Image (cartoon, rainbow, N blue to C red; front, side):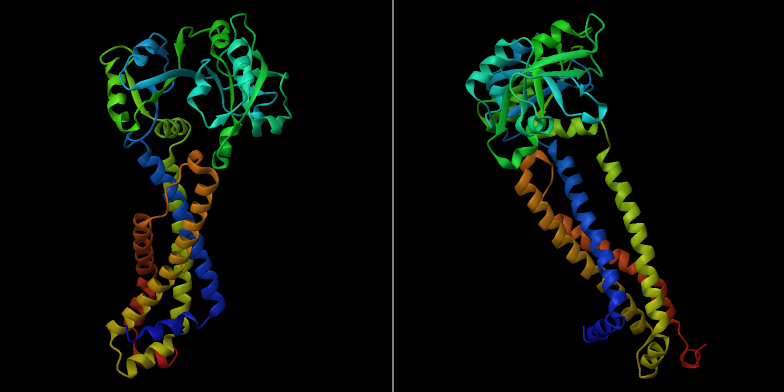
Length: 387
């Protein structure tokens, strides 16, 4: 510890170089904090369903496989279930493939399971009574300048109609708002009448994509989920019941392997960081060869010189890592406050901090190893002679 002033002096020898290197380290660990937060959230989402009041039941084999509608009454009869609805992914596009947004065919009572989506009762009634009725979120309506009474043609990408047509024309009968602005991203959805969808589609009639159940007591969610899955045990349509958040995570995973993406990005970032900081340390030690020789002359051992250079590298990485993790915590906190659970993010807590700091130490030791060994093996005569 008594030689830390030497480490600090070495870091400040080239202030501009040290600053830019610190900014690079900061950026790398900012990404680390953000991406690890996302990865942790996705990994933890499916751990338990305890404490949630909405459960989603899908095929145990694959989300893309449908379930028979006959399960509806049986799920409703499960003790602890207060209400059940169902939905089916549609996946249509509006006017142009670039105008994609989530759209689903849903049962008439689907919206009642989401009290946070506010809509006048007259519009709810119109949705139940209009065969081609559709409701959209307020932000989606603003994006396309839709208003009540408009007709919305969706081009099918999965489900053509029985008559061979590919255009599903819907009547906009309702626009909902979210009560909590942290859930504003949920206003980007479109729902339309499942009965119309089931009657007109070319295949899959009588099947639904998934069931949504409201649990009377969230503390009993795990028991209820097991009871629902027991209904179809050892059948040709076994189910998996999970929390709504876990379902959303699984749905995203249909399109991308989050762990692989995070790993690939972080691998590229830290490979670049090792090259950058390694080059910085090599230059720093090369410039100080005469100074290191003088340290040895006044009594510093080879091991002391090795320790000084390694400490300098580790200190550089730890300073940048700490700043990056602090900043990532602020960013994650702001996103969570703004969007709530709409974007799965775990707080940048102790586990992420420990992983980040351990990684900083490891990278510091890697990039400082060769320069430190050079300093340790330095011959005083050669160094002072400029050889």
